[in-house]
Amino acid sequence: MELGTYLPYLVNRVGQQFISDITPVLSEVGVDIQSWRVLIALYQRGGQPVGALSELTSINFSTLSRVLGRMEKKDLIRRLRGIDDARSFTIELTETGRRVTETILPRAAALEARATGDFSEAELAMLRQLLGKLYSGLADRADEAEDRLAG
Amino acid sequence: MELGTYLPYLVNRVGQQFISDITPVLSEVGVDIQSWRVLIALYQRGGQPVGALSELTSINFSTLSRVLGRMEKKDLIRRLRGIDDARSFTIELTETGRRVTETILPRAAALEARATGDFSEAELAMLRQLLGKLYSGLADRADEAEDRLAG
DNA sequence: TATATTTATTTGCAGTTACAAATAACTCAA
DNA sequence: TTGAGTTATTTGTAACTGCAAATAAATATA
Image 1 (tube, each protein chain N blue to C red):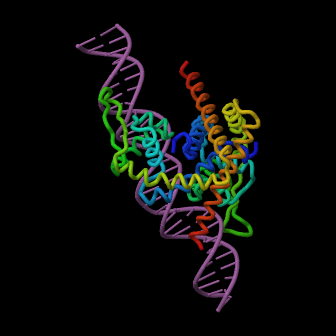
Image 2: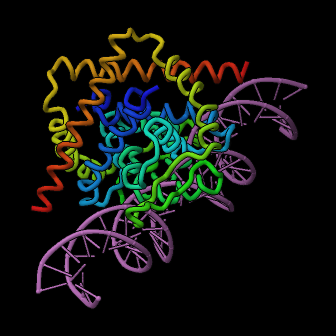
Image 3: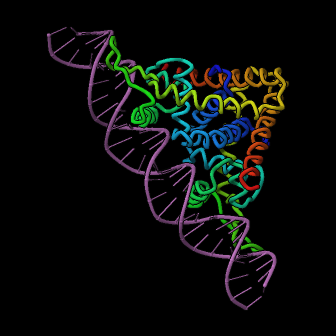
């Protein structure tokens, strides 16, 4: 196996570079990378319970609980106790959260656009499609693994 | 912008899923994810100074310094003080490190193979190529940013 | 040769993370 | 309607992380 063909390696370095690129932008508004993931998820998908948000952001649920604590302190999100089920909270953006997200979004989009400046539309679509397919493959197997443990 | 087309999102969830998949394998031999990254890098590329290893693994250099501390304690790597330049160390695998790496490698390869089971050879090659291209685009811009600061 | 500057790595510190256990609230069968 | 089992979230804890400052060694400059 060669390092340069090992997918976890290729994916990790791209992911880390994305983080390095966006971090200075986030610092300007006092937001950390995890909070940013939560912000986009809520902005795009609307209010979510913690569990769904954990799934959506790939943030471990106990970590997420504390991320939400920080975000609440900064008035970026609100925890709404469920009416029908008082165990779960709906997490939603506050007006501040929405405003901060809208400040960051165009700059994040610009970073992505510049990173993919050399890509044709077809390549870009292909990359997204393949990353989606890879995720499905990984997620499927993860389910199987759970099934094996359970059954 | 839609979440499902945002590259940092797509990349992050794949990366996290890779971590979830490999973690139980690593736990069996008492190795954490960062140490695993160092192990493969050294195994594939041979001894490296800390700085180069930081670049290669995308691990922050001060974090890496401590990762190497853990690995040294477990006799996975060795720090060799440079002969010509006593500031730098060459980090290399010990025999234990090599053995542990060779224990994990086939299982890591199997995980990757199963995750990409539905991929044609062409798709797999395309994905790797596009991830490489994306990284170049990111890295190039990062250099530019540094240049702007410097000059 | 002494001094300033640069480069490679480590360390202080304050904050973040993940695992497992705890809490809190719901469901359902007896 | 009670209590066993389940689900959603938080918290205790120990370890990990990244920034910035410190150290250590090399190189350049006067």
